[in-house]
Image 1 (cartoon, rainbow, N blue to C red):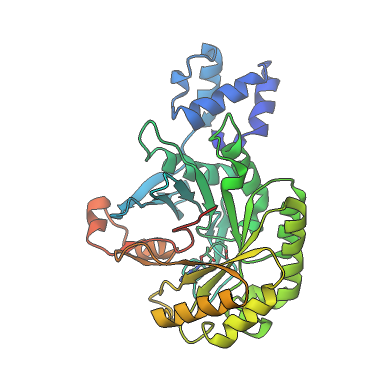
Image 2: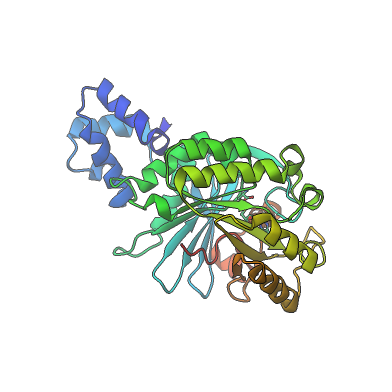
Length: 368
Ligand code: SAH
């Protein structure tokens, strides 16, 4: 048996052609699953009965089960999904008062980048997610919404490094942005990367209008090498060149994410150096106040230090946005729910309500 979502969009088309089916059948199947939230082939009433039986004999639709489901007071919901091989990943639905319904999704189990302040990479990379597993997160989140509501935005800011799994991510996003799929505009999709220049250039060449967010976190190589070890083989210069190329190709403003870590990268000299680095570029700096990870010793900066940092960037002519955590309940960083439940898998939502809520940090108030 095969995971049907893994065959979206192109392979399904070929499978149907081999069975003498017209090509529009692929669109019908996509619409049933992605738009009409149907998950039984039997219910796909505009398909010939025999085709429905053939599909049911060869494919299953869901490859994950909800191992935990958390809800925060502000409408944010987080799912811990257990995959066929028992690995677990996180995805999140964010609601805001502009009626944005944003899905934050993962691309890998674990992460190989090893950023020093991040929970997702503490155990390294376990494996890439498949196209179907990436798309399935969107479907699971979409189905949390009531009948009249749909996902409006996607942020690829969950676990993993998206540009290290681009071959599987791109077809999943194609189904998400397709008008016969989830119908989410490409300009409403944000891909957040640690900054792999080859991947950025590939994305630029792919001719898609996705919004790119680069996790910079430091204004010079010495500090970035410490916080983001993958920088040692890259360097900020090559990273910014790739980003400039992305901007030239797509015309889309780049967002630079900068996690503020108390006493480490939040000093006035860092703000001035960051402003100098980005001056003249069409860029937005997204400051993220660190979500402390219990296993790691970093702490968030004081409010006054955040304000000073913002002011220095603004004085330096840089567009800045500050992302605070949403609500007191929401404390832990991305990847922590998976880690916590590795030690002790909760029996269900009731068990989780007693624990502190955990949320990813990447996605709270993405505005574009
Ligand atoms: N690998 C990609 C996407 C996943 S992380 C990337 O590096 O961009 C999404 C964002 O959350 C990144 O900017 C990441 O640096 C940030 N992040 C990770 N751990 C964090 C923490 N403890 N507090 C605040 N932000 C964190």
